[in-house]
Length: 95
Image (tube, rainbow, N blue to C red; front, side, top):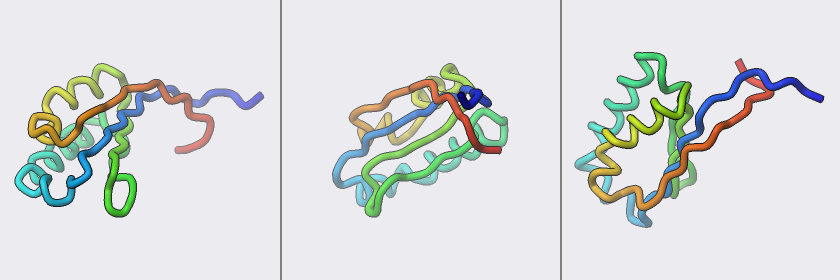
């Protein structure tokens, strides 16, 4: 059995189908929020999934940090994220 190295929180976003067009006025604020959480050490990884993007995946140290991020995210406030999930992610490989 492989030992669990660390448990983090995976924040998964579902995006609206026309995210590329609709995100434009909110993108700078969204990316600045990611940078703030990353600089504070709360967000470990973040990025869009798909080409064109259909989802977002962000890894946080705690579920509380992930929930706080959702509450502040301009994408969520603008209705660009119709659904999200915060799940524990038991890492078995990585830095």
